[in-house]
Amino acid sequence: QVQLDESGGGLAQAGGSLRLSCVLSGRPFRSYAMAWFRQAPGKEREFVASISWNGGNTDYADSVKGRFIISRDDAASTVYLQMNSLKPEDTAVYYCGADPVVRAMSLYRYDMAYWGKGTSVTVSS
Image 1 (cartoon, rainbow, N blue to C red):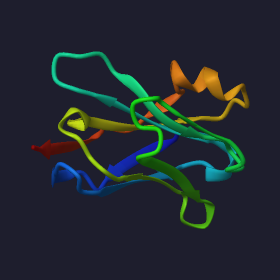
Image 2 (image 1 turned 30 degrees about the vertical axis):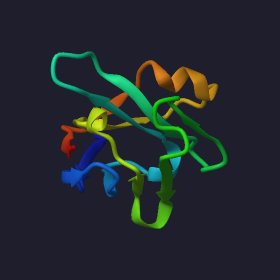
Image 3 (image 1 turned 45 degrees about the vertical axis):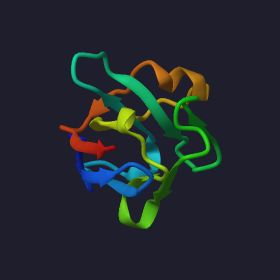
């Protein structure tokens, strides 16, 4: 069974940086496309970034493009989200997702097969 464990959340000031990590266990990491979503208080979960199973393709929401970077380390079974130039509106619970199905990158914006429990990010102004 796939298990996803996020870490790295916390409190940051506007303009600062945080790096989130998500470790996949239970199945071969390289088989999965990975993504980050977030859910702010009172709002629906939204797509943030995704990376293909081989790392060759990435996709970003317009709201984070140029500020966030998604990457993966297959040896460590880990996907990262480097968050720079943080804004108060980035405050949310961030969820890691994994999907074993190879599909167009745009389709990972809507759902993933497996989810972690989330890590909270708070950005103060």
